[in-house]
Amino acid sequence: MPHYDWIWGDPPPLLKRHSEVKHALLRNYLIDYFLTLVSMPQQDKIQLTIVDGFCGGGLYQNESGQEVPGSPLVILEAIREAEVLVNVRQERRKPIKIDVELICIDDCSYALDYLGHVLDERGYGGGVAKGLIKLVKGKFADHCGAAIQRAHSRSPRSGRALFVLDQYGYSAVPMSCLRDIFAKLKHAEVILTFYIDSLISYLNEKNLADFELSTGMCSSVCAADLDEIKQSPRWRVQLQSSLYQSLTSQCSAQFYTPFFIRPERGHGDFWLLHLSQHWKARDVMATTHWQHHNHFAHYGKAGFHMFSTGYIGKIDDENRLQMGFDFSEVAATVCKETMMAQIPAMLFEGADGMTFEQFFLGLINTTPATRNMVEATLLELHQSGEIIVMDDAGDASKARVKLKADNVLRLPSQRTFNFSI
Image (cartoon, rainbow, N blue to C red; front, top):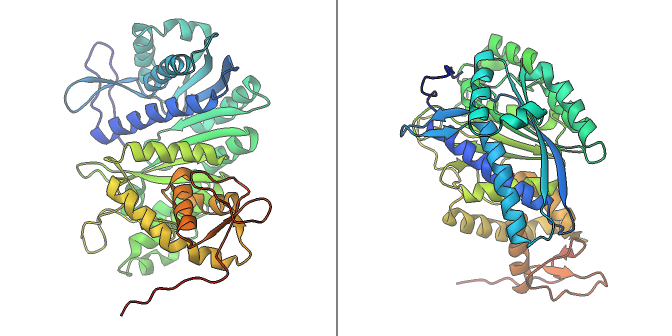
């Protein structure tokens, strides 16, 4: 668990490079998120609540000695930037207003004091005075219910809220909090960091029991079997896979993205989990990861079903470096080639075919590919005759650049096989 000294008048604490990248991803995701919400020119206002559950003091210095914003400032700056972009891009007659109430929670009183000074110094003191920015002392788990209620009261119909939960470690966000968020807020999203390497590296019977007690997560790993599991040459993979499946199955989110933050100098990898109830939110996050491919990775195979073995650490059980999937241009090519080979076999499993929407939503949580990437691959297979896309009249579609949600995908009645000598 990191320790930060927030003393007003002293230089801000050091922020590691991987955490700085994490904040850059948050900024870019928020801007894309806001732009997605205001796609209709007639809108003049969007209203939501953002909860920063582990907000810290709001200011750091990076490894180059420069001051860099913490998550509260990142969020507020992203709102300002998005408003400008929306109004410029859509040439609006009436400016858009992004009405956000930001709730900053931290268990450290001097971190909140420091944040108050930072906000005032950066021109956000009026927001604090008006209650648009709330500073709340305490543990996130203790204030989660009140934050959910506040978000619901501000947006009772849409239930639009974003929870940024950059926890210190892996046990400060109970499953009950996540389930309540998704049960009570229709359009809630959660960005959750989870220090998976730390949990796995020190996992024993007592630590597993403590973890399950503090999070309420029921792991499929039996504590009594841990010693036996660790005799396996791939024990880390087995444990990581089990924990990932337990978390995603118990948090009540319909869509999720298990991307990994990849530190440059050995602090262990973090899960960066984006949890939501709508595929479009998941797709925006996946797109953001492709934009930050230098710092994010999957440790799994390309294409679909790449998470079937769960999370795999950068260093395998024989201390060999795992290359991983790095979201580069080469990775995009490999991802497409893999999907080209996988898709015909998947359609054979449903011989009567399935709609594009059924196909995509059934696989979205198992791939790093965005919807556009999957769509482009399906169209290429259709144009080469490997699959057939049917229109709503039951005829072969002439689609070349776009698929409709109800287009039916199936194999041709007779497939052509090429045999080389």
